[in-house]
Image (cartoon, rainbow, N blue to C red):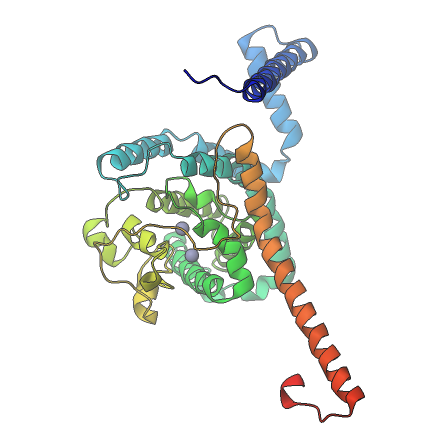
Length: 369
Ligand SMILES: [Zn+2]
Ligand SMILES: [Zn+2]
């Protein structure tokens, strides 16, 4: 039997030692936090623990933001959300779009990190951003409010607002694919080769900020009261989550109106024939209207992007997930800086060529101007 080289054995040992040290540190930290909570918080019973959490909540969340936090709790702690997630897992297992993809693939693990590291942080920040945007809107943009709809029932305003949001989403999505520096950010979302329930959270943080501004402002224009606006922003998010899953369906007759997993998979396709189609975010009629709809409902292509510079995830363990996330978040800035550097160098080369022609007395060529 072949012997394992000594250096390899020592590497395995050092990795195990590091893992052991990290696990011990994690257990000690949790223990320390629990001890601090019990001793400093004076916790003697389960009721004390609940009161302690409530006190922290009152301390951290100011009064005007509580409706948003309450709405977040109702959504995130909603058993329906977890029932939907479980149902999607079953569906992924029974009717996968990509049969080769494992249920808990490397891409899935990376996207769960995007969800935890980016999604949940952002959901927490959404209430603050929503409130700040409302103050900004009231101070500077209130002239955009659609006065003629102020007395219409809330349901009518919500429907119109959702249609308007979806139209803006379509236009913005189209631009993200056509403007190179917007694409540098949007490419992060398209980099997933193993589409799954959490791929909707693989969105660069700057793109997410801009997306949400374009959701909230229309809700203010149509005077959709809080926290309904927050429910709508998160509810639309649930819908997007489901159509990113690895499931083989186009929702029957609903496909003529709603974005489906099949429709969105074609948008994520790496095949050149599918380039720049199916930009719809909730409804499909904008693509039909503007001629960007892919009408074959039976295609479930491979997804991803062809970009040798993109830091695709190769591993999902030993801190790789965090390194992948950092590299993917940095990717648009790497693209922007290399484009700026290339433009500066070519401009410097043009100026140098022109001054050499002037110095030599030769006529300046048209191409050098
Ligand atoms: Zn896209
Ligand atoms: Zn997508």
